[in-house]
Image 1: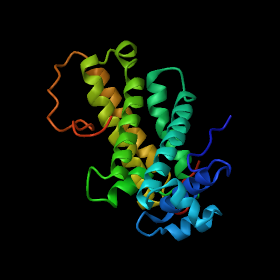
Image 2: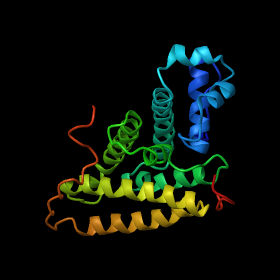
Image 3: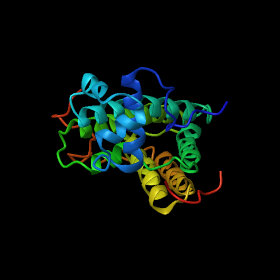
Image 4: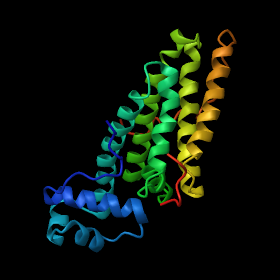
Length: 233
């Protein structure tokens, strides 16, 4: 069964849910600064009073909308990945096939979380915090998929954390290139690089591990808890 596209919104429900769906769609397509409250209210089909009833500001609405998207996007990505095979290698490389399907849709506008973070200067902005938490959650999932490699092909368990971070960079790099180039096959280029990385790690099973430089971790101590597309959207 085909997995749900991560940009599909839930059916209209309460006024709050309609505001969240409208904010997510408009911000993802046009950006935070270019999206006004009036446009969100109009698209949601709610009264402006509803906005102030449920949210203290536009930023609070956008942060909540991104949290909502994070849940749906991760469920879509996890399901799609798990359907790509039984081995860790199949699932890890299959992540890029999942992305390629997304890239080929007309609704693809890049990574909503990177897009949002790029509009805000402060790393402690609530929207930036949501974006960072999304990447941490994605990294955790990738790490889980990397763990069986120790048994499957002898990858040194001490190398797995670094491999997961490198994998996240390949995933986000594919998303960025697909957005700019309009080519869904950016996912296949990243997949080829990922396969070479896996082969290298399996071949280096007995090599010593270099200590990870400080600052490489995504987390901060201060943070809270199938042809190519025609054009990029």
